Amino acid sequence: MLPLANLLMLAAIVLAVHPLPAQSGSIEGTVYDSVRGAPLAGAMVIVEGTPNAVRADGGGRYRLDSVPAGALVIAVESEALDSLGVAVEPVKLELREGELRVLALATPSPGTLLRLVCAGAGLAEGEGEVSGVVRVARTRAPVSGATVEMSWDVWVLRGTKLEQVRTGLVARSGAQGMFTGCGVPLGALVTIRVNAGEGAQGEAEVRIAAAGIARQDVSIGAPGDGGAPVARTRDAGAGAASRPHTSAAGGVRLDRVQVERAGSVSVPELLRSIAGFRVVMGSRGATAVWTRQRRDCAPVYYLDGQPVEEANTGRSTDVEELETYSPGQAPPRYGGASATCAVVLIWSRRTPAETPPERSAPEGAFTPP
Image (cartoon, rainbow, N blue to C red; front, side, top):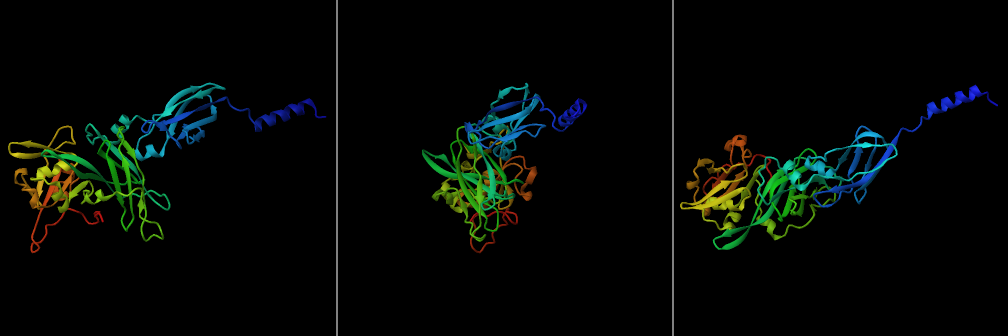
């Protein structure tokens, strides 16, 4: 039998190797998606400064055990929020030893998200945003630098008749494949077409709910990549053929067919179908106003590359193509980043013998199929 002194020494060694557990408690609850009005499945709940982290299940439920007692900061990470560049405000709490704390977590409200995501876009009442991530269909890897074209129908009044016109906007996917489009009308069914070059294309549709925020990822594939088809979430239907085309990042272009379909008399009236413009009818005819700023401003016009007053832009029947750019988005030769209001480029119709004017589209610009 070991002497008492040896037994005490052995007990001390065992305690040194296996220290008593620290005071701890548990935290459980549900992560809620305020935009969709449903639990946020797959969200990561993290106790900052500790290795404690868990992913919420399909019902948004989570539980963290063996959480050190004391002052804590609880954070939430979500791919959906990451794609918008926003985060849930961390929650600070005091956890007592042996306590089971029930903690409900939620993403920012739709109104807060819109203010964060579309800051500076000058959203008008009744407008929201579409965002998502462009991914390779086979590998799910994010794709940066892809051209993302979003288009939808708007109703415009032509005299006493309502007509449906296709309009839209253009964005580019960022470093993590993320894209955002602000200024989309609530309730609109938006067609998203992605072109990443070399035949890599994808298409999807999403509707803007009353909350004003829609999330739709787009997978792309290429006909020649070993079997991956061109990705389509849903066919755009016959209306896709009349969508505005992009001539450069941030620009919208109406071709000759679209100009004729609009049925407008003057160039300013053509702008009625493009998001961001408002047309005012006066004694001298139609006047277009750019409304995506804190105050309205008068667009700057160029006819066949030369500056021109609105009154001298001519009739719509003389227009071959029309391009519009948001402030600061026009090609450098037409003001570029220094343009303080929208820029409108008008290209007139020419006979076959005439040399077409130089277009604004830069080398490598996306041309829809």
